[in-house]
Amino acid sequence: MPDTLARLNEVFQQVFDDEELEITPETSAKDVDGWDSLMHVTLIVNAEKAFGVKFSSSEVAALKNVGDLVHLIDSRKHAG
Amino acid sequence: MPFPDLFNVQFWWIVALAMIVLVPLRHPVLRRWAFAAINLLMIVLMLKSGVVAVLALVAAGWLALRVGGGRMGTIATTTVGLAALGLFLVHKRPDLVASTGVERIEPVLGAIGYSYVALRWIEMTRAVRSGRHPLPDPISTINYLLPFHMLAAGPIQSFDEFVAQPAVPRPLSAAGALRAIERIASGLFKKYVVAQAIQRAYLTDFHAGGMYTLLEAQFTYIWLYLDFSAYSDIAVGIGRLIGFEAPENFNWPLLARNMVMFWERWHISLSMFIRRNLFIPTQLTLTRYDGGQHPLIIAAVAFVVAFVPCGLWHRIGWPWVAWGLYHAAGLTVCTAYRQWLTRKLGRKGVLRYMDDPKIRLAMTVLTFEFAALGVALPLFPYEDMFPWMNSH
Image (cartoon, rainbow over all chains, first blue to last red; front, side, top):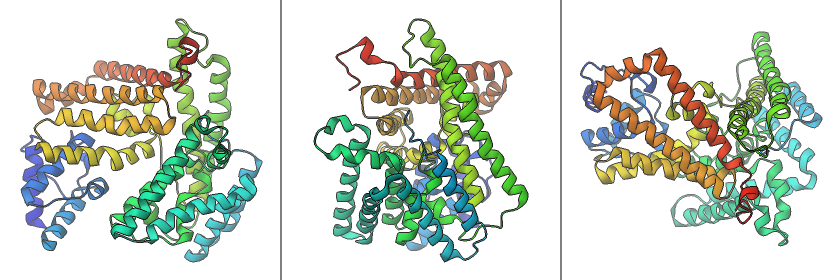
């Protein structure tokens, strides 16, 4: 999980164009400026590319915070 | 107006019964059964023998999922989905099937708030078919699809949220009960005092015409907010009392500063349903296909895919298609403006710009006016102006 979170942090910094952005498992859309419904999917597609995984739209819609996304990425990597 | 009026004496007797039975009941299985019995009793009181038709509807939806995955499961779900869509057409446009006999089912659909039941069934189907949750038993299915306090005008609880609710809620404290009763009283005051006063004093169903149309659009927007959010207040209050909570549905939408924010605050449960089931799937598919090269075009397409069906969900007809396109256009312009500002000012510059009190005020007024015209758009008496349209 720490590796996934660190790599995901780079994805967040790239997508939101903010090198100072630091995410935690508790970080949610209300904590990051610009993380609206539009950017949510851009973020997910970039995360998919970075980790070489793919999510269903139901999984994407059900994500509540960064911790959920990290958990989803880890479970998908272990399954693959 | 679009909501079935359940707020009669019988409804409040059911609320009292639900409190007497459910508040002291601490056994999880008995609570579920008792809630299902109360939900069905409400329908029996409303529809008498029509309850059989409602149970057949729920049974068909449950059995389609009971078939399981694979080809047979897909066939069963698709068949029931198409039948549900047919019923939706009957519900929203009984005039289209008038004199066929089928239209006689419309009062049954209207009484249970079929628009909302159908969306809950879609939620449940997607959750079960995607493997996120196992198939609920018939008792839980009744409780999810037909909660008596959410029949009139929602909210549309997500299936994830329904499943996540504790089987036995925390005991109801005196302070909690008082807050819930205050919420119900606030809803009743909004609906039966403030909204009714506005309706009687200012609304003419846009028959007054002339410049008054613009003023009436403002009052209609405020009236709709008060009336509709009142139903949600009452559902939320009752849900807290009986321990089967209804989700929040409004969060000061009249003060939204842009249309994205508006849809995060207005009829929240419907906009979240649209986001989960239409907007995200469309945007995800197109972004993967396009490689993220044209996010604005993709967003515009996803807004149309999301909001035109949303318009038709309210009522089937061209004014509601126009309503969907109007909101898709508003959201696209809002998104494009934000992107333009970000390019021009940088991300932190945009935040400073948005915090400027004059800009905030201007954006709030602009959003209010856009939303008010959006409310008025499908309600204009087009038949008076263009008799050939006849609202079709």
